[in-house]
Figure 1: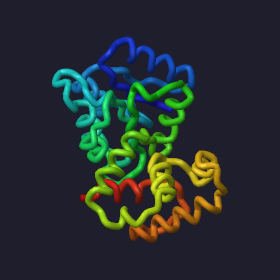
Figure 2: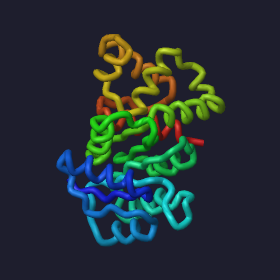
Figure 3: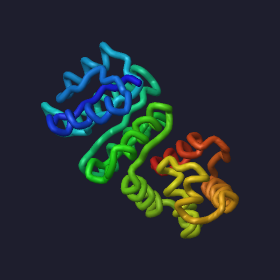
Length: 216
């Protein structure tokens, strides 16, 4: 699997390269600035991009904007964004086109290699990998302005948060120590209360929930 990586800190960039290569990823380019990332996207065809939000020369949201431009030029290009903080605006921009192949991880909450590699693979396969803190903030913002959210029970909110992170029914059942049948019932109730289309496809469910959280 071919990767374009953008990270301005040398030690972190080098560590990410070594980690990805250890799991049989091919690094097409490992760059440190926005212009270099734009050039890499124009010249290469990665299977997934791993991008720091803030890159030189602006050190604002240059990495994200390069990734968004690349997704507009190549719809569906898988992008996993890394950030130091939860930035709701950045998360919403990433989710705005309503397609899969997106992720948003907080650097200091990636605790082991397997967690990170799983996220890269999930995004590359067209899925989602959203940090729980990002989902919590999107949920909080949506709940503050939306009556249907107020109809969800505490357990349904737990299920919705895990679903939005990209978890399958089986994974949610394990996390909450309940049966898959119970999770399926909760998800059906969630979709009914929020007026979302019911789907058995895990990724379509996630995208529907994320699109709902991003509305407004």
